Image 1: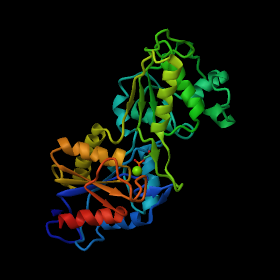
Image 2: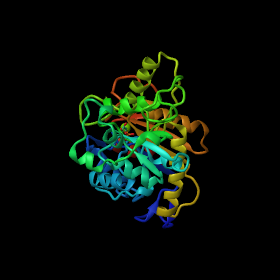
Image 3: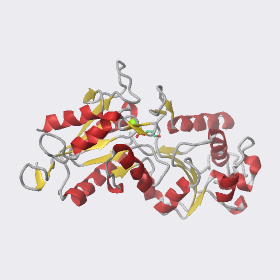
Image 4: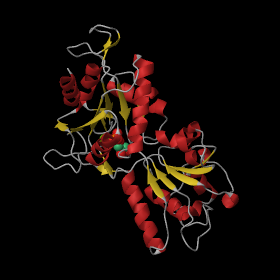
Length: 348
Ligand code: G3P
Ligand code: MG
């Protein structure tokens, strides 16, 4: 324990360990804080018997808004000031692809929010499904743009446009329409809308910001997530092309190891800028509710990382108490407050 204050006291900061938190099913459900989460944040911010501040970041597969806006939401929910420097959402690592592709289709989220996110990441030419429907309303027979969507969507002649890649940034608000447009592109000649490939192997690559088939929202049972959309897209593509075609789909987010490595870099930066700590921590406690994403990824990065990634599973989200998790955590606890206390007790 130490730095920036040298003695244990109100100013002391934990320098050997940190926490990283999943959000849905751990801290928040259906837009509301899980009650123990607010107390867990207080404990991290010094309300523990050691007066210790414990550096922490947030790593969610969710998205659909800028990191700033998501941090604003989370700050209000958890009654704590959360900054973009300690926050990663599903699409955050996609910003590293901005220079690789020129014209991209961005799918998912409310209204124009994901276009704003993509342009903020530096993507030069961002198309939305709304632009395509505005150009040709017959694209989606049962999906009509609202007057607001019509006004916000961009007028464009797609006859000369090549879509270089498709990014699913957030959950689709119109699965049928979005899957239709994605299939049109997957079966197109090189990403040209309105064309059909003879071989079905020349569509653009499809990137999903995560692969969670289900997630924990307000309902008592888990709800369908982006991984389910991906499955429907892939299965339908296979049906339509008789298995002849070739799709290129990739997922970011947890449980991908590069996402955890990205989090590790953010943690080092956050520890240094916010807490004046140098070098990596010895232990990273990762608290999650989804064995297939959170626990699988934490255990996988632990295989290769220099520090100890310690997986903690909580019972407030996707994981159901009494069942056997598909990926085994180092420990299972009731909720996020117990997770934080478990980590502190192990360290002190
Ligand atoms: O859509 C979000 C969901 O799939 C998972 O979010 O915070 O549990 O990683 P989170
Ligand atoms: Mg979760």
